[in-house]
Length: 253
Image 1 (tube, rainbow, N blue to C red):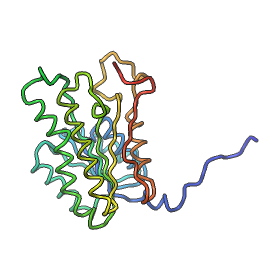
Image 2 (image 1 turned 180 degrees about the vertical axis):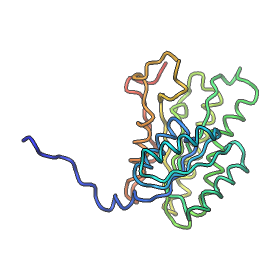
Image 3 (image 1 turned 60 degrees about the vertical axis):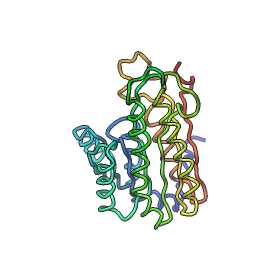
């Protein structure tokens, strides 16, 4: 039986679907966002990424353009600023007629409890984790609705599925993002636009360095990127509504 090749040929229709799409990923200078941008770039797509740190964003863009066959461009911006979001969306639409995949990945985490977290924590978490996705989606939706196609991924968290230890306003903001996704999904069905909510558990990124948690105890950013990318490849008739991914040994205590 040696010498047999069990690899399956990819359908031509799928090859056509994944070629030269316009992909937007926010918060993509590192971590999950960078992994998602890299996955789509490896399939020869046009990638538009953003984050606040221009130096890190530029380095990520250069790295992805050198190591993939995609066309990656960046725009440094603060997604807590509505006017900055609109400038980012204008920049995108100046370069493409419409977006095929939007990944609202930008987010932040401030640990705490509702009763004792710092004043303003809720406003900050809502601004980064909810309103950035809300305003950017609204800015890009008209062109997607006109084309009657597209896929929006909103990066929530397992903290949106149940009460989360030390979650505070972060958990509240992720619950709100889940509600945004559910409503948007129903509204976009007549326009053939898919909406998927992603609920990752602990993923090993720079924020975990020095924490004492073993990398093998939690997931890799590529795990989330692979799930998002795969969900984007389904037929027009299919939509993955929710993606829940946890470490094999369960959530961290």
